[in-house]
Length: 409
Image (cartoon, rainbow, N blue to C red; front, side):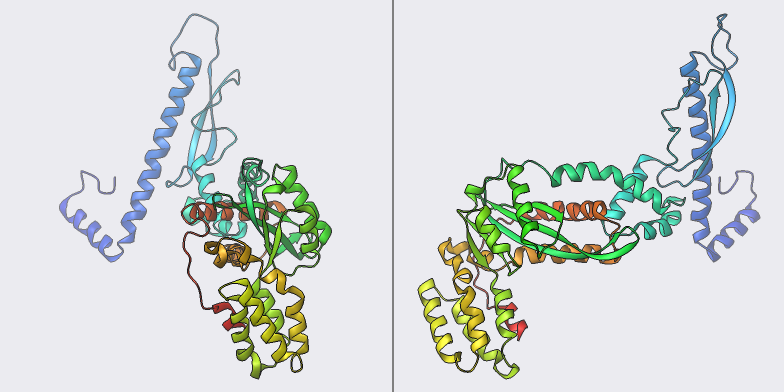
């Protein structure tokens, strides 16, 4: 107890006076008392558990030759919110007793493992968790232990990442890659993670794949698409692929999804065009791009493109040529429901997802490897999917004022 019953009034006053000088001491004393109580309680429960195992109390005679108590061994064990306890684990002579209260192979409560996993999945590195674990859990959790704990998550998240897709009817696919610094053996390399987000026929958004690969390789993208189909994705229901200008991607997509059309991201195309425009003309060219990409219909958009070509052919031939090569893929969205135009004319949906991946892993700086990347990104993706359930594609139709184009100037 903090203040013993037999303490006299002057002693009590002195104790409270010292506590007022350092109020935090009372909580330290309380925690110490709680630990002592927890240790005594657990030790008594362990004795009861052994009695139940042997079928009799200590010193009780049954007249039969049977197993006996055989002393104790020390064990450090950490329950959640209490801190590290020093326990005396009873033993039996035959070595058949194994406590279910305090597992022989665990040095901390299962609830701590869940907390460690949540800390890791929230973006903390294994080293950071190791550093703060004594203050949070009352014992040090090494970075190796953190990795071991998180290995158990891999099975569940990997099952989701490679799940069967045959129940999903996908009509739109957003395709992109995002780079991370990742540990590869003894070196740190920039490794792309390939991401595909699908939109179902009832306008729900879902992650179809997150996997390591070269985002500039057509062969890699072909394998990604083949993997999706091997997991049950029906290629015949896919109507549109939204992507930027990754090398070889459009060709492979057309071959693997022959019924689908391609929408090039207008922001990426605008950025490519503006790279070929002198600074003094950028605002003027942006206005023309706005007239093309945000026309009321495809006919008007093509008419505005023709005016742009005529006006700048002599002055900015490379910019005109850059836009001419992809103008058809930039205007594909006009073939789809108008309430979806705002969402399918750019890769903003998948860009926002990639930005969230980066934000949530920023504190880690370096991902520990492919498995670590899968764990983290899948966890983040699942949280995003929960939010998406309340915001299906095309729920609102708002015509924006091309803010992304303006930022490119």
